[in-house]
Image: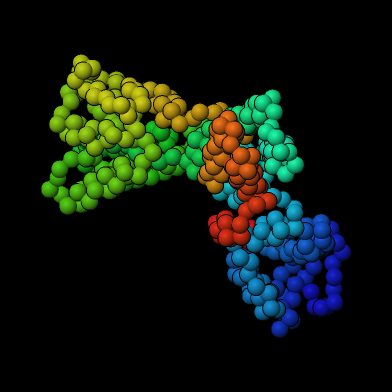
Length: 420
């Protein structure tokens, strides 16, 4: 575009030639779209350029635009502007970030639900009931000298109990929702040559780790992402835990111990075709206080007696027989990995709380409601009861942004990528 007075027609896409204003050289043939306020994502006037995808070309285009007194957007600035103009609420804004970062179809589905305002729609009736409870208490505080009737107190306490239950039910979905959004770290542990790398390859459905009959082949931790029933899993194959004179292998063993400390779940592999050794026992001692699955590998071979190789502890989630060689028992292992961590069907139509901030605010809401419920039962002053109710209302408002402090908003949008 050479004509500085050129203004594209709103809500229409136009193909035009972009020139460098300093040299007159053609930069690109691009699509230009003018979104006139308030009919844009942010509610402001927006011009969008759709150029060809060459990184060099885009860098040149960006440099030219910046030379015309423009600046780069801050992380999440467009979404923050949309929030400020009432185009969406805070929980919907956070859903945009979750949608961009989603690793599975199930995570995309949940982010889209929240982007569509599902969480806001579920919270609004709860806020309405809370206001209904606050009104008579405020009226009693301001205008009534006598105590509230017992019937009214019982009715208010019943509403608070119902609210607390519904808030708790929503908060209970966070265990599954967190895994859906953030995934879980699963680590394969065992002595050398029990088949960790073979199981790793089977779960990935590809030959990612080197497999040989030589013990100690894996010298370092190897991680890959997979999806199990919509849950993103970071699966890590580790060096066998044992004492070695090889300094390189010892470095791998130290990384294995670090992986154990960081894991959400450990798969402890044992060779069921051999008797339990002191090395097996040492590995079990390293993992027994962490959530773990005991995978008895090489089930295609004749086993030793069960009591010889199946130690368990209170943290043992399951004992599964598998054969990495034949691929048998792997479905049972996959089911065992995700079963204890799934309290809700993530593929269903139910909304899951996926954000730790939302969960914390729901928990604080529930605590405030319980406090007010107890105080009301003790027949204390309405003024004290109202403190907890207003705290609960404020916490619910922080989820959707009505009462969220500016410093919290800044921290939230700092987690967005630039240009969103």
